[in-house]
Length: 47
Image (cartoon, rainbow, N blue to C red; front, side, top):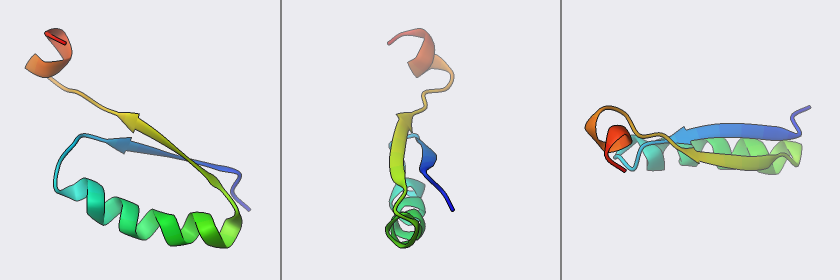
């Protein structure tokens, strides 16, 4: 069904919740997880 799943992460509390839902789906479908760190605002401009 899925071959790749793109997951945007922001180094926040929601990241673990999202991964907790996505990892079982990836295991069931054999999909690879592609993790992308997303920075917004000041962090993105000054990295």
